[in-house]
Length: 122
Image 1 (cartoon, rainbow, N blue to C red):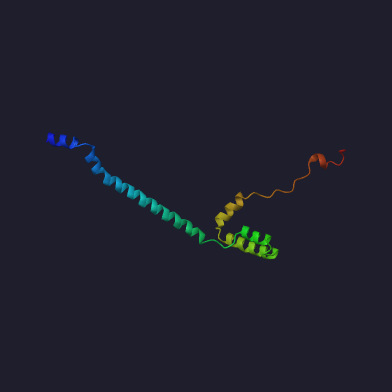
Image 2: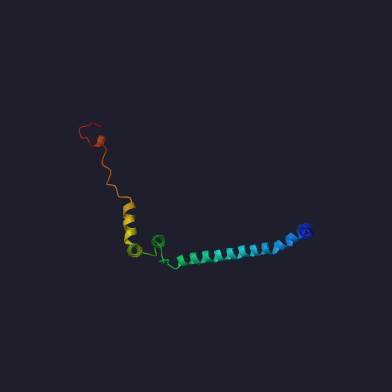
């Protein structure tokens, strides 16, 4: 029995590699298949976003207006339509959160005390 253990260990690295290379090849193939699957899933996920596109963005409409292909009235109507579509898709909770974090408009700046005193000579 001791002789059998010695002969298997003395056979060298050639037999160890011959037993290991099918596993290494399988691992490389598995990594390549996994990468391909991840690539397909990414492409599928990106493709689903494009199908929900409205058609024209506000920037596209403004460019058409600047180029003279859209009148000011048509621009306002199209902007209002796009904005209403976007707002209709927002849940009430999200709308409340947006209203909470939206910066409030500040009232116009009061004149400084130095300029508001009529008795103060300039």
